[in-house]
Length: 253
Length: 256
Ligand SMILES: Nc1ncnc2c1ncn2[C@@H]1O[C@H](COP(=O)(O)OP(=O)(O)OP(=O)(O)O)[C@@H](O)[C@H]1O
Ligand SMILES: Nc1ncnc2c1ncn2[C@@H]1O[C@H](COP(=O)(O)OP(=O)(O)OP(=O)(O)O)[C@@H](O)[C@H]1O
Ligand SMILES: [Mg+2]
Ligand SMILES: [Mg+2]
Image (cartoon, rainbow over the protein chains, first blue to last red):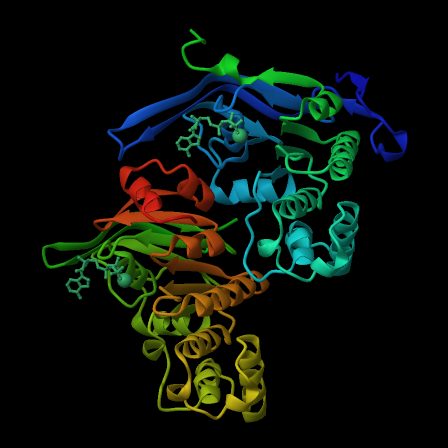
């Protein structure tokens, strides 16, 4: 039997679609994950980044990864996304074993379940901003007008001036690109989200909007793994901090 | 789901020299796979074996046909294979002149393909040809011009229209953007990306350009000396390459 429990940090009940979540619903689970890089063309140097990393994130929960620069926060996130291969261990997201999955299964997971806001926007040249943001919804087969409306709503909330919506974001400023990236990452209500420094390079007003988006996502039951250098932001949205230095090779044994 | 294409142990030799060897993979409907590797690594040889242009010395190429389900195209009769290549497959050559008939008009280049699959109505053939010119961004007024009067990028777009007009399920492309200016390439890629998605095509794209695969391919196969050295999700292979050769390939381009 599953036990129900109230979700945490639900700041405004108006946004909450789930009053109770099933405690056993693990969205993201890492068991004994190791990652090292072998640089074959540099004398086969091996860079061990982590060993024995275990982590569970339930629905409605936000876990913040902490640790010094180079400790492996982004690496861990990329392993969860299937962008980096785990050297050992198991990563499961939304019931899919990412470590064993076929490319098409990972792509389906990324389309439906697992969103990722990376530090930098990577887009196809010539595609207008509004399309860039609506794309995750269009890829899921949503109605075009609905997708564009939702994209417009997010861009407006993130203070991207409407005159920019028809342009490709490739020429935007760093902060503008970051906000487009965030709008895109929040277009679909992903059940699981990875956020790599989503508030970096944003002013106070936009930072506030991003934190609200994160809080709303938690309230609708999203499991979130985030990296926040801004400790105030981290304290506000994180339920649990995980210092990835504890997974540093050499410390484990 | 049944794979659209199941490739098992394909090998092709040119005398004692290996063209490609021990290549196996499954391609599912709607998947786009990129093949990269240095010059002479066997990419074109493999593609031609898959598309029935070359007879492999060993291996199977099982295609999920509309009528009979999965059938090995290596052992099927030549007429059957030719029919498949008209109705279900498309092949986009690196040099547009290898895939076009240069002596007939643009409209005829497209119309011919429709006639080859049994379309006989002149009016509908012409209007579909014009519709396709439009989709590949060639002005309708050029419908009666010969491709010899087109620029390289236009010829390549015409070749794509000629290939896609019959609604194939699997498209083979050998360096579709090779030899074009960067800006022309970008436009062509944009077009290909849109068409692949809109039509739900499966595709196998051979290229040496990692930016092209990053943009178009869901998955990637890396070849060296005729063999597959690494395969996987495109962004994973490019961002976390495991094999020495792939690492060299990725590190030798500035940024993709
Ligand atoms: N693709 C890669 N190839 C080789 N080494 C890598 C790769 N990606 C990351 N690393 C190495 O892994 C280690 C951890 O890097 P990572 O980017 O995860 O750190 P981080 O904790 O996110 O740091 P920061 O706070 O500076 O963003 C570093 O030593 C880095 O050089
Ligand atoms: N008709 C042929 N006769 C003899 N050897 C051939 C023939 N075609 C290809 N080869 C050889 O087979 C190997 C693979 O060639 P292939 O054309 O498949 O390479 P590729 O990866 O497509 O290269 P490129 O990027 O230069 O087009 C090469 O060693 C090549 O010399
Ligand atoms: Mg980082
Ligand atoms: Mg070739």
